[in-house]
Length: 291
Image (tube, rainbow, N blue to C red; front, side):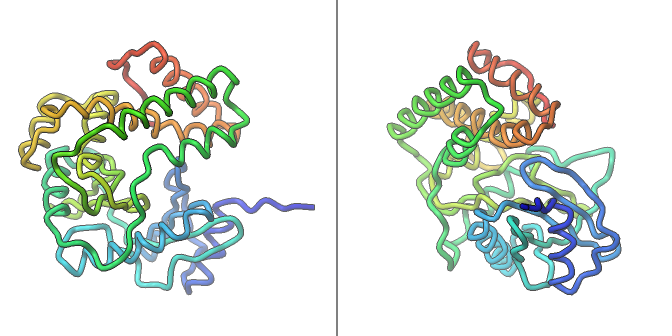
């Protein structure tokens, strides 16, 4: 008989292995990753799937290097990590309590990315950026998608990858956060930190800029995009390849909703269906829900 271990159980076991008291473990959110808080320790516990282990090891090493260079990345907790437990890999991070009334404006991310891209190459091997690789895994494994949805998404993925291969990138190649958007920034007092480094890669610098512009689907304003561009020092809207990268980002965001829908999450299934419908109708202005 096979027993399925829940992310919470895996988190508690990993806490014990790392010498942390997991009795106060509290859920924070569950989307692409299950995230918990140890309030007494001031530590965030992130539970990811086991295939992510190498990327998580890279994320911990990279952020420690960035912090040593003075870059405001989120800080890994001072424990041995990552920890493998059952079918999961667990990492531990310093908790940054957020005010309820405000989130960091997009302009802060522009400044952070400018500083990140100006740093020398980190002394560790980063995986090459592979657009929509994780989406293929989700499409192949999904039990929720209809055959029509799967066929359309597979074809659309192929079209976007073909267009991506033809792009020329004026900003060149280097180390990337690769999941940079304002939602991955956090207040730390008056300072802003950049978190969620699981997808750190080597690739075209435009990747780190395009995600913020895809955010028009979540209500991001022209004024915010102007400030982001000013703070970074380059307006990607002048580059014809932005449309392709925003299309790739649109599809990339479906992966976590597919996995949640596969687990029976009705809200995720509803949002997934809406996003696919708007993509198939080529509705570039449709507003999506972030949760």
